[in-house]
Length: 552
Ligand SMILES: Nc1ncnc2c1ncn2[C@@H]1O[C@H](COP(=O)(O)OP(=O)(O)OP(=O)(O)O)[C@@H](O)[C@H]1O
Image 1 (cartoon, rainbow, N blue to C red):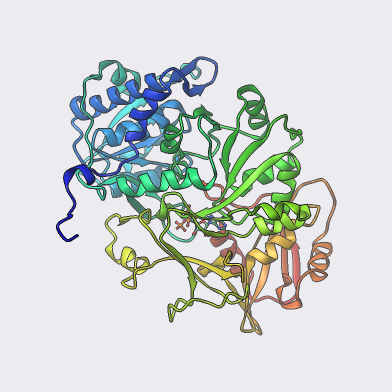
Image 2: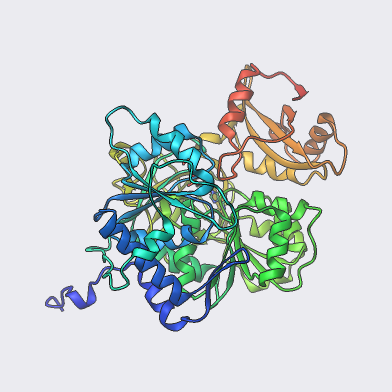
């Protein structure tokens, strides 16, 4: 056996870019990308366009292997194509959240060393405001403008060296795209949401994204040629790898510049949408919306990004959506834990099904190992559904590391072989894990750990509550006590006292929020997650707690 070594034919680096070539052969005349009323491409056209843009990036704009190329754009066709075109030019794709402000965008562009930025017409001002914030004499990236027929936004500057469509036009179809030399060559650089600290620059490899893309398809049982609605921003963790995955199955990408509940329901009918991904905040919006209507055909939703309260899952499924629940981090590319559904659970009552589904679950097929461990000893926690530990992961889709941050990388990618997620969970006797908090968010009251997720899930069952978040508030006697921030849905009236009473009848005494604040809206990150650090600061600034309720 010893003479059987890797040889070139069995060692060609895996890359998700090969999905596009295959899609162009099988699904040549089938729709690939649909946008508004005028844009409709087939897989053959998508391949041609990507190849031509890649050739322009490499040959006309002078971008070389491993240069970072950024994109500031919503879910439009160009954003989809650049997921292939940029790495086909040998470069590293860096999608930037367009809801950030000019200051943070300048920080990210500088940190990434970006050489080229594709800018959507509606983000021109944002990027043009960001560049002057670079320190003097630092290199600035070149800019390409992505125009949009439906938005006549005049080019506001001569700083753009080309438009996107000019690059397509001038590209060479004979271009031989740049294949990775190794599976570990970088393909994307994604910044984290900044929910707990400053955004970190996560780098993934071609091989990691190849595995993550296929893993995400298998886990959600995505069939061939689904009709996929782009609600989840591609700028956030590359839309959980589905830009590449949809090429693997020859799906139709329905692109949307922006959306709300009405647009989602209309798009479902108009395009016969079968699948979309959405954070729990979108499920809450869909199920609370006056536009909600029973579906005419099954629509599959994959939810992840924050804990979906059981009641939100229940309401969403009552409308006819079939929800699958997964868990992942920017650091894992796609979803790596998933609430794998068992057929015999279908016999259970709907509320019980929702409760089971709100658990994050088990490792996906593509992951090597997943565990919940005591972060000090590294020993697995008991499978008792109550001992808290940290989720740790091993697998090929874990990132290469944080860009220019060896210390941060070593802190979470440890010598014991595990990637430490910073998420606190319990392991149930059936081997399914459930997140209780993030390590920075656990509330410790009188020596007892309180899971903010558990308190929030009770708050979500209150008929007047739209959104809820629970954080620690300093307390002289208990150390910390739970402080709840809620927004109301306007359907029913409720006072702070009513809500506290409601919790009291459903939670152990020590878990009941001692402070409850009703706010118009809860602060969110640009990826739609509730900014608990902002709420924690607010709770802190209220001073030490004594039983108090207020309205803000
Ligand atoms: N299904 C889920 N249930 C509960 N939490 C989830 C789920 N999926 C993802 N998360 C949370 O989202 C986190 C990953 O989010 P992301 O990578 O977007 O950045 P972030 O962690 O929010 O930002 P930052 O790392 O900058 O603070 C996970 O660590 C976890 O806390």
